[in-house]
Length: 160
Image (tube, rainbow, N blue to C red; front, side):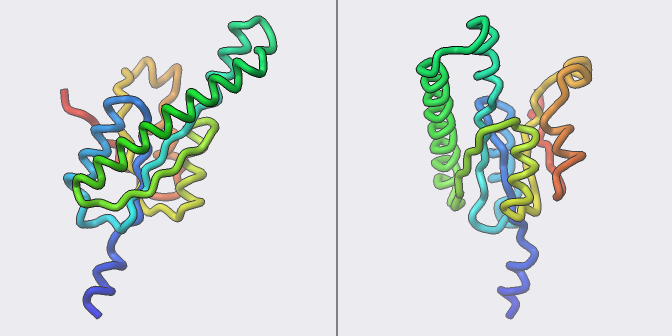
């Protein structure tokens, strides 16, 4: 009976990662500091942004060739798979079972939607390292998620 009670206090957590050093630091920090309070499996989530396609359209003065779009999408998919495999390997080395998920879309919205879809109790993000001015003009995934995710959000900042 006591084992069942302990299980109910464990959080279903999701770490959102990208190619940045900050998101990898957040994953490492979560594994080192929250391992015993996380339920299994830990969700490792990444988003393939759509912005690359719109950049292609702008660069090609109109509609890019379908082959070019397909090539960019395939490249994004390969990068995402490699990123998730590396994260899963890091988790495995630390004795943590991980489930990897990738979505296509706007990272801010996709992360918040995944929180609801996968019934996440704790979202863990890396601090993107943007300055105040950059955050004001460009926005920030972590700021958006803090205000819109349907669970607590832990933003892990890498110390300098």
